[in-house]
Image (cartoon, rainbow, N blue to C red; front, top):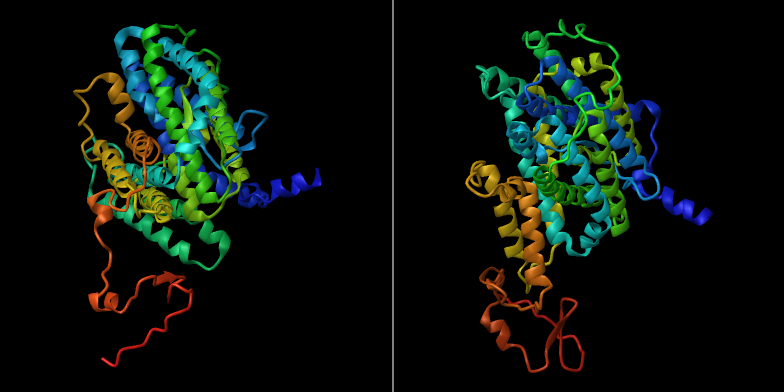
Length: 488
């Protein structure tokens, strides 16, 4: 028992910080993902024709359930929760599908019914899905982590430009100035030789950027006091769920994408934290995802999944404690119960978040590159796997409308750069490294291309039986052959 406890507390993610530091870093996580978690209810609520007050209820429900899902994922109970620093929130992967269900006449009740049914199916298949971990070597995880960072950078760019593409000042010099100043604050504070300051550089930079925005007249807290201060999410506030076969099938495809992305995020954060991630841990994480998603419609919200942008925050701050993210979950629950606090956070200008997001999301891509550096590219097709998978993952980012003419099921899977890259990397790794593959020194033109050359006169000096061992030339008897430095 003592030995097991020692091993458990040795995990980096089990580190415990002071209460102040824990909630400070937790708030930093909330600010990082706040824009992302309120976007789906905003979009779906508008498509459903809800009033601003009803959309506010929808957003509060998303914050409340996101907090509970985060606590379950990080604290963990038997069979549920990866016990990793992963922030949970409403998955953006299902926005298009939910929008289609709403606009095709099903309304929000059909959306909630499809989420419940599809999530229950996902809960049942989670252990099977987790068994694919053996097909996630560094060549696959590196591709996925890199793609996560690259696909999030356009989000930072949109935030930096103002967040709302329909606004008159979208991309204005003032917005870009705000983003640049916030980015500057991040860089300066990261350099401060005080651990607490450098680790909280993102949060402090967002606060400093907001203060700077206030001097420019870009922050208005006058509306914060309007509306309810405390409100508990009402079960089935938008009506009882209805179950339609077509909607459930469409949502199940979204669930498969969510399972893929969450698996990738679990592997990514495990790599960044430096802890062991096995199929049991992945299964526990996926079950927590699916249980949270199945319960979410009861409180008027949608599918839950891990937030990739917070993986970047773990990478850049070096704070690996899962209890920090648990504190972030508590903050989300409070925001869900206290809409007034949510309105305060909502007043942070998008360009400020964009300036911080540049560093955050770039750090995720950098972590992926670091993982790819561990891959052996000699005598195999790994270089082709990386090149093709990242290229496929970037297609919907470079050209967002590229799959608009494809079937809905195809669009649902491949419209996400993360799931596109994950599917491509897994498939190509299976094809080239598992299905009857034999290593060849000339597997492709990239591998065959020499990285260096040796003058032929050096080869003339070698005799039959000579070989290189530990960087030294030895003869057939194992005796070292001395290397003489040429006078020329």
